Image (cartoon, rainbow, N blue to C red; front, top):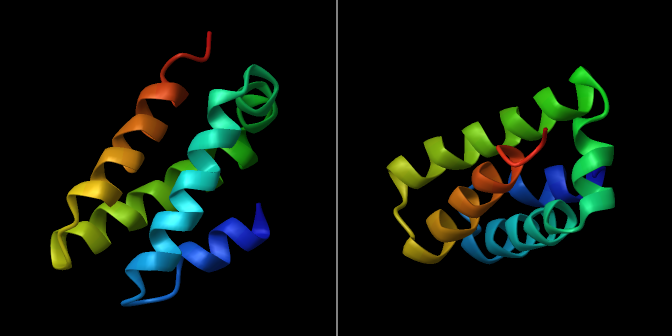
Length: 81
């Protein structure tokens, strides 16, 4: 997760953000990955913080592809019961 976070934080680099968000989305799509991230408050809040920063980045540099992946990550997080 550290590497995904690092990739997402590279300002102005849309490709890094897309790749990192896609990786996060794939982790979340796996039931084990979703359970792992939602297992503790720290993990969940860290992922939520990263996604929130991505939304802020999107407000400055719009990208439909990146928005699609971010929304899918949020949607998958909402599946956790």
